[in-house]
Image (cartoon, rainbow, N blue to C red):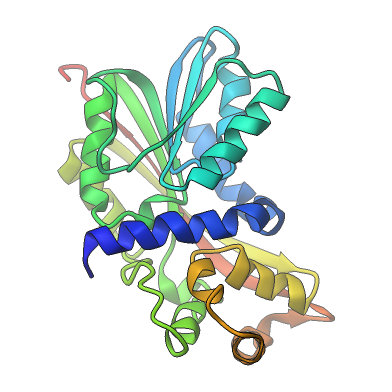
Length: 275
């Protein structure tokens, strides 16, 4: 796939998803984000970059950790996501949070600008993840660290049929290699190639809990990576896609809701003191 097209799909797709992303995903992603923040071990006064910040679920917690003496810069390819973080930071009076729309593969920061880099469930969407990781290494100070979370292997994620279900109805061009980084030891190897050292990886089983059919479909279609393609569906196609998706997760139904298995891979890596 043309990387330029994929970036465009990601940018406008997440613009579509921004309004309902937090509603559907805040609780579901929390265990992985918590592990990421534990790995990051942010300290008061540190300067931190949050790449692919989304609606700021990690950004705002990180801002509390570094305090007003620190600084958090939140970047995302989606203008709507960045605007959401900026508004939330202003409402919370977190004046040490700044935001900017930016491509993870081309960070517009000087070398050795940050003590830590965070990237929570965004790296899978980057056309060239290795390039993004190299950029993280570049902007980290010697001894600095990155904490990264991605989805795990496809066979461990019960919701994975969402991608072929959408593709059968309209070409989504969404991350054909979505599960690659979470498979086997791929994330570690890619981080090592980018220049990270002393890498620690945790693979976490998790459960995505949905109270109803509507919640399960809302998360999968409107609030996630296929939002742009989903916006092109007419009512009949949407209904048909919902039926097929619900059928794909039926084995995890509990009463009126669902408990769908998932997997997170969370990593921490350091930049050597020699830079």
